[in-house]
Image 1 (cartoon, helix red, strand yellow):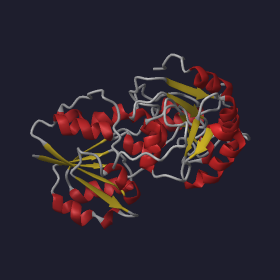
Image 2: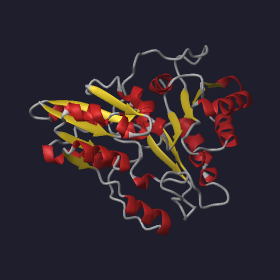
Image 3: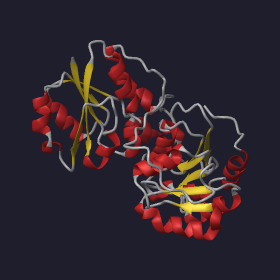
Length: 327
């Protein structure tokens, strides 16, 4: 049996995007395979329920924390889906045949700084899958995976049990998420019950939005785990989300998605993947300097790109939910 180590240190969305590699490797390796995964300790819980993984290793700061254990495993191959100094240190230390994906950093730099789009017209997941070509493994086209630790869902208020939409108010970078005032405008105009999800840093914003919008909006921001937020997405009729990890979890759960794009663009290859459902991407397309940065942490405009989104289109789609899917 072949033993393989997959490396991806962060973050939530990027790790979810590696799940087709794990699944296809597990099912198609001709002589059987034992798959281990190396990530950061803060993301281990995201991977531990995955039935295709035999072991998940985690680090806090340095790969030296686990190198001794990794050497003892005697891997046959390393699949590097992060490609940074840490992953290079692991590959150099293990001295095993390794495969790494093309990050297209130069093409991203050209797009951000000169507006020239030289990005390959494929999703980042398909670039991840190219690392398995040597094993003659093909994409099963079943999309992303998200596995729960349990099936518990946060207790919803009365009247929300049967139908609601989720609006994600959190994002890793400030320039990726709309202002509180924009969320309030959305919630006031959308004629449906709304559940807000986000991290602890969005808890106060969630309460403010809910207070401004009355009983049709309920905030779970900062009040539930990642699994709890994912469970709320799983049972929602629609998810409205910035370009963030929850967007990819929503795609894994095959939910209708309206995604909001500010300083980043779908052309980076990180849009919702193989979700045969509503997939509408809302951008401030009139801002010609976009994208502003690779990660969405910087904006080229005095006012933020995300502030210029055509919110009425989001409202119209959410109230009708009949717009054709985008591919």
